[in-house]
Image (cartoon, rainbow, N blue to C red; front, side, top):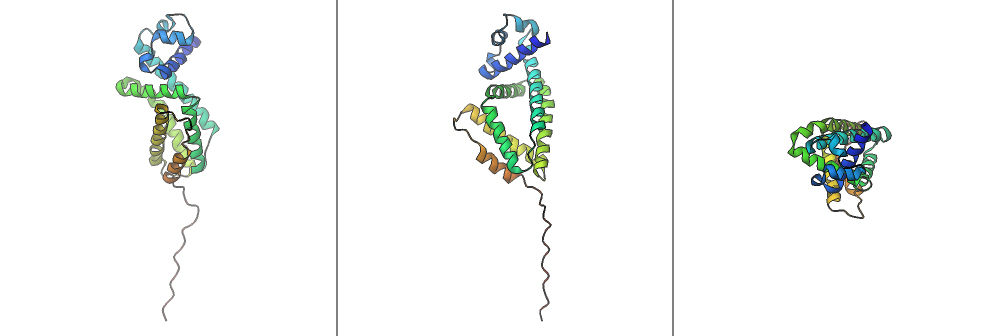
Length: 201
């Protein structure tokens, strides 16, 4: 039963990313999951119930994805951080384009229906903690300030590429420029002492 439910919800996420919020219907989910008509409505009686379950499933998938990334990648310099963010942007707009479009559709819907926001809060807090820790390791002296600056820019870069796809998409230069400017690593050198001025004879 749980596998069938997850199958339907994963299909619904794909529908959401491919067709937008208006395309999210029980019938479309059944077709995408390659299950008999009525399968989605048997699990989710109303569209609101379907949407709430989709957001819950999406949040769980996103948390699992970020946890996997956090265990695998750990930039230690601003340059390494910029490289990782560039790779994530290319992945989000390439192989995982549909999933990313679903994410933005859910975020917009949460802005209209506040009840959905609570389901995204835990995921957002976990990702923020993960990225803030990355910044700290990379040398940021104020990760709490730097995190929203960098992530808001990254979000805009990804959104622009989704809306206006560029086959030659390569955000490495702008992401690197932003990260290396915003993140100011701690200096490892002791400040030079001012030279003593000799007495005038």
